[in-house]
Length: 383
Image (tube, rainbow, N blue to C red; front, side, top):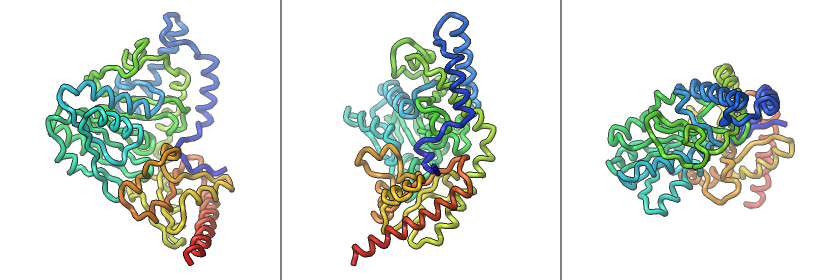
């Protein structure tokens, strides 16, 4: 099997898997329990919080564990709006956000909030001049994705924060960092954001784990109520073993980040060099996209058909965000107005540390066959 859909999810590292299995046997106590067994689990939770906080350049107490990126996005956006609604009803995001952000904004739009969706360029970068023009005293929240999940486009979050805070210091700024986390170096203190969402299963940790950074002093009201876990901000018994495994994945990632980044960049270059031998290829990802993400279009084909050709040889790619696969919403390529031939023929390739040069050689051989075979069929139909 050759797995190249690592933006959708990643395989749990063997070391993390073994660590998790051992933890399930040894560390199953409830961290809220008063006995020493529970206190040990609580201590391990704090160690995990520190590991992830250190990787992001923030204090452990600013990290709150969640079930994943979707919960983190929903929590910050909803809590921020509740906190700031006394200042106004204007909220801003971009047209190319993940549905975990867009659907929340749509909800508040239906409740009477004034929602603005920033335009994006042909690579999916949010228009920061438009953001500046929209900013005023009534803007209570801005949420802007850090790395686009289909194209790999990196938004300039630091500049966006500077624009927002210079116009209105009370405006809260959130970023969906799910595709940035582990793919590019992220220093949240330098970015200046008030909230930042991450997910464990994108960095070779287990599914059902994630975290939300909330800048100290933001003082948001909790989104989930109950037992008062996570300092009263996120109730519910924590997924302790998953959290421990998530932190283990981050610990390994921190040690291997530079070497694994270089490896993925080399694999990406291998693909880019080869596809020059195929006619009518469009590279949709910008040059500065993370080395692990590459979006390509092959004209006069359909990405979905290419996907099914490749899976016959147990080669797995995607045509975009996995979250679009069960609905009819537009892809990012469609939203930025690219030619339908480009949008229809697009595929997304996402590399991991496990992929080898030999994997990519075989993938490219099968990819070229698929594209040429599909074009033979589509050309006949046009005659």
